[in-house]
Every structure is written in C-alpha cells, then in structure tokens.
Image 1: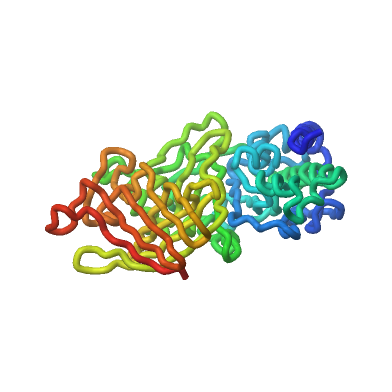
Image 2 (image 1 turned 90 degrees about the vertical axis):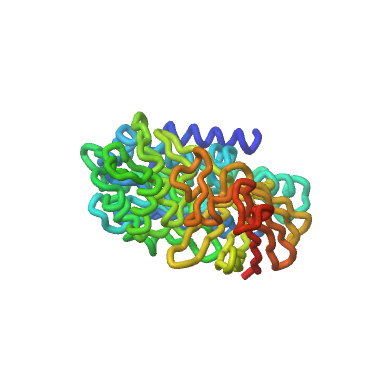
Length: 433
C-alpha cells in the first residue's frame, strides 16, 4: 500500500470512529505517550516539530474559532453531531492526506487552534502541534537514497508515519471537543461595528499569544459569522474600502504582514468584503479568502524568506521602505510585502514571480494583481492614481537581487513622475538585513 493510500485510510478511520476515543489523547511528546488532558489544558502533538534531518517550516497557522459559532457540547460524540462544520474545517488544515496534497498546509507546519471568548478577552489555546509528513521533494530524495531521510521509507517507519498522522487528527479533534465545552447553546453572529466586536477585540487582546517565533511567518484563519456585523456607513461618501482602512488604523491591531482567511458556517454568505480588505490591510493583514463552509486554498507556504531595508526615490525626496521577499519554491512570491514607512506605515502585498539562478541572484516581476492599487479606494476596479497612494497607485514592480543588494523600481505607464513625460518609474534600492 502506498503512503498516500495509508493516509487516506487513516483519515477515514478518524472520521468514522476516532471521535469516540478522545477521552485521553497524546501528550506533548506525541504518539506513544498518553496523558489525561483537563478542560483548560491545551493538547500538544509536537513529535514532528523538530525532526532530525528535516527542515522546519517557515509558516505557522493560527485557527481562531469564535465561541459564538461553536455549539456547546460536553462529550466527543455530541461535539461531532453539533459541530461537524468546525470538525471538518479543523481537519482540512491538519489531515496530512488532504492538507498537504492541496497545499493548504505544509509538512510539519505548526497548527495552533484557539477559542475566541465571547467577552473580548484573550483567545485560549486548545491545541498546538506540527503536521506529520514529508514534502514531495523530501520524499523523492529519500527514495533515491540521497539524504538521511531513507529511514522514513522502511516498512515499519512508513506504517509509523501513517499512525502518527491518525493520532495527530485525534488530538486535533480532542482539542476542538474540549473547546466545545465553552461553546454556546445557540450560535449567533457578531453584531455591531466590526472594530468594536468581541471577535476583533479579543484578537487585539491576544497579540502575545498570536505571535509566531522569530523567523516564522504567521497565517490567521478566523472562523466566525459576520452576517449581522456592521461594516461601512451608508451615509459616508467614502468607499467601503476607505472606511475599512480608516477603521483599521483607529483599531490599532497588528496582523504582522500576514495572510488572513475568514471562514463562516455553511450557508452564511460573506458580506462586507471590501470593508474587511481595507480594515485588515491597515493592520498589516491581507484578506486572501472569505468563504462559507470550507476554507479556500491560497498561496503555498514560503520556502525561503529575505528581509531588506532601503529607500524609494520619490520626486525631490527619498522614502524609507522595508521589503520581505518570500517564495514558495515553485517560482512564485508568497507572503511577500513592501512597506512604506512614515507617520502611517502602508504595507503593500507583493504578488508575482521570482526566478533565482543561485541562492543570491534572483529576478522578481509583478503579476497583474495591481501592486499599489491595494491602497486605492476601490481595488480591483478601474485603476486610480493619486499622490496620497503609495507610489501613486503604480501597478507594477520589478527587482533584481544580487548578493545582499536589491535594486529595481515601481512603475506604471499611466503615471508620470514630476514634469518628465518619459519618466514613469520610481527607483527602489535596499540591502538585506
């Protein structure tokens, strides 16, 4: 039986009967060491967080479950009956056979699940652990005997990894089951203005809990119901995106230049997307998906990350910038940003392609996602250009990396720089830090 078929069988087993076995689950040493878990104790499954010979992932995912959408349940079987949506969503990120194949999660990526209280207090961790598994490249190298990973492909080790994957899912469901003890009798949506909601108040109060270790990027998955929340003011002349940005600046949250996914219960249509995009952008977050029932896969996790500090040669002055250049190992930028520094920092997501001829020589080009148009009043529509937008709203960028230096520019054929009709680009230079 192949590794993938083993993992698929394990996934079926956990859905069929694994829920009944959550009275005791694995402790922090992972499969093989059982421990009783109290209601307030987070469940840990960290056996794959530091495997010898395997690199650690560069991203950590935080799944934030709004207690208002989690139905109260005292027993594992009751949890499964009342919260199938929550259970399936958790497994979508943590079932190796599904999450790794789809690219939704990375092998050995740490997944931390937290319950967001209804009173706005800090989120409570209910589970943390690292997904058992190997990447396709790691598996190929191991099978070819070109690395120290061949041990994973003996019969016993392969069977052991499949069992580890099954136990990992049991631990995830155990954490969710414990969280359901603090759920609500009847689910309800968030109400009132988004910035003052208990959901985002709790997220702001959880800043210390939600910070990944240095050198690791974060991704946030927010599970909630925003169908009754307040978004833009219909009497305002500003666009929903602009109102969202203003609200985001005032809220004072910080998503740390991260991707944000919002998932609502099945049948709950997303609303207020433009407001949320602006609201999160002002706080260093990029709304990569907003869906009902199931998460939507976005960019794959980064394989390399580089940080730069430098300047953009604005007409008559230089503006300070920082850049985070990350790639997914397949020629695409992933979790990359350029931030304009000033009285109010303005982070811009970078999307496009990266091609490297060596570890220190790369070329980077933007795609058609609009670059600085992320800060326009209506991103995605007709391009808008204004002096108060980063780079005036330019839609393109191009960089070259040589050693520790990054050089390039932001440009747009519809933008004129100063009085020079032929100049439509702003030079950017930076050094790796």
